[in-house]
Image (cartoon, rainbow, N blue to C red; front, top):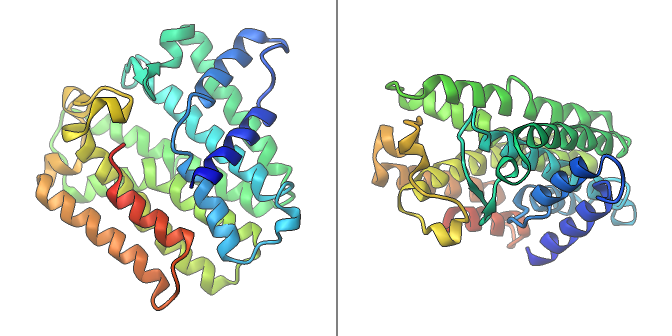
Length: 283
C-alpha cells in the first residue's frame, strides 16, 4: 500500500499543472489540496484491480497510472467542495486548513472545478471510452453528486436505514466501486470477473462510509486529521444515528466478510488485503 501511495503521489505531482504556471494562484490551491497527503485508497484499488485482472504492466503508464491520478483528483475535488461553507463548513482536512480557509471560497471552488477537468482529460488519455463513462457515472447525479444532494436534503430530519444506505452507496460507494471497475476494465477483465469485482466494490464502498460514520463519533482527531462530531453538529443522516453503534459495526463487518467472499479459495491478494484494511481502519 505504501508503494501504491508513493506512486500516486508521483503521478499527481507530474500531472497537476505547476504552481509556476499561470494562473499561479489556482494551480497553487490545486496542488495544496491534492498533495496534502491521504491514504490514496481509490487509486490503489484501481491499481490492485488492474493487476488482479492481469493488466499489461508494460502499458501501465499510459493506462492505469493516468486513471489512478484522475480518480484521486476527482476525490480531492469532492473534498474541497464538501468542506465549503455552503456544504459542511469544515476548517481542517488531513490535519491542515481546508482549501477555502487557506485560499478563500472562490479560489477553492475553482480549484475543485479545475481538478475535475484535469481528471477527465487524463481519463480520456487512457484511450478507453469505457473508463471515461465509468468515472462520469460514479461522479454524476446517479453517483457521488446525487448522493451529496440526498445527504443535504436529509439533514435535520428522520431518515430510514434504507435511505441512509442509498445516500452512502451513492455519495461514497460509487467512486470506490468505480475505482475497482476502472482498473478491471483497463486490464480487459472478462464479464464474469468484472461482475464479481463490481459486487466487491459495492460492499467495501458501503463499509467504508459506515466506518467513517463510526469514526466521526469515536475516532481520534489526531489520526483522522479533521474534527470529530461534525455529523451530529450538522444533523447528518448516518448509520449510527439510525441503527446504533453496535449494529453499525456488525453491518460493516458483514460487508467486509462479503467482499472477502468474492475470492473464495483464492490465495491472498491486494484486493483482499484492502478490504481488511477498510474494515480495521482508524483514520
